[in-house]
Image 1 (cartoon, helix red, strand yellow):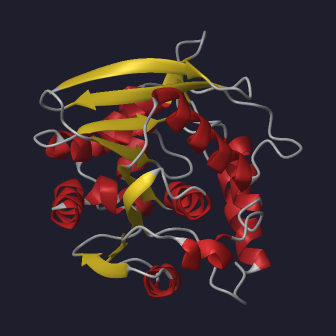
Image 2: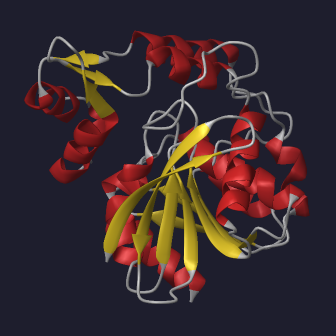
Length: 284
């Protein structure tokens, strides 16, 4: 398996960075879409497991990783922008009729695109998609808390070791293998002129995305999805997100729900082998 970095200029003017993990010659493509606040490189353990059968493509979404970062103003981080970027990126690569794997907000973008443009995806794997069931809205105080928390998040570190120790001590990362944290630190930060490291995804952007979480009605379009959908949730995810996953699996016409043992909301990083096994089983 080889892993290569690429860039693609989208019609909107956004320059998108993406990764390609090549499988055997003529291996079918599969698309991977990351969650808010993370980056394409964190699919690496999953992509390595898929490489025996597939060539994986994963882009850094706008505001993340090495993709352009428009200012967090206007509709730059409206969730429809992420759907349009995904469509334009797939168009640019000529990818049609491929399986799609998305995590959290990245899963939501794929589900919406599948409903609007069914020719893109043959099957979808949605890992704890952020899709509010009809009549349910993310509590405003909680949404505000998530947005403000992202804006306050520590973004600068003295060194890679300092960043690793910080994340290793945080409850959000308690189930992450050390290697997953190292990938995040190595590829999710950049060196500043003063020698310190800074997160590539600014807290202001992550906060803006959380603030816009109700900007696209994905629940409404779920019944239009023609492709089979596997919804995955973590065994230890919070009750609300587990309920959302089950509701999405019930609402799509051809849905199935699976649970990853010993995982929470961040299952692709916490249990990449288990996630990859579920993907391969669903695609077989």
